[in-house]
Length: 110
Image (tube, rainbow, N blue to C red; front, side, top):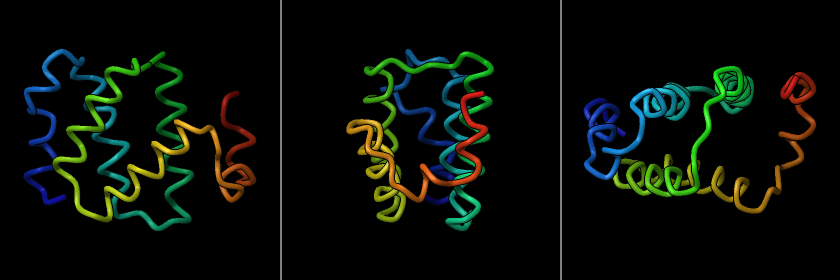
């Protein structure tokens, strides 16, 4: 996703009913992580998710579907692959072993 699309996606009309704070949270999670290595990605995502838990930030299924639809419109093929992987984990609950066994997972949820 180019620099203009990183902000442009949040102005998509489909997102008009979703709280801007939620969109900014996703902006951080999805786009600031794009340059991280695979080893740095998990600690970053866990930290962001923990922050969301502390702020009691939740997304309805409808909000998630809308956001994913918009993100896919503005994403590169590489980003689409990551989005699809995360959505598969969310849908099936099947977390890859490398994530389950990561040392940071022990502190997640506390």
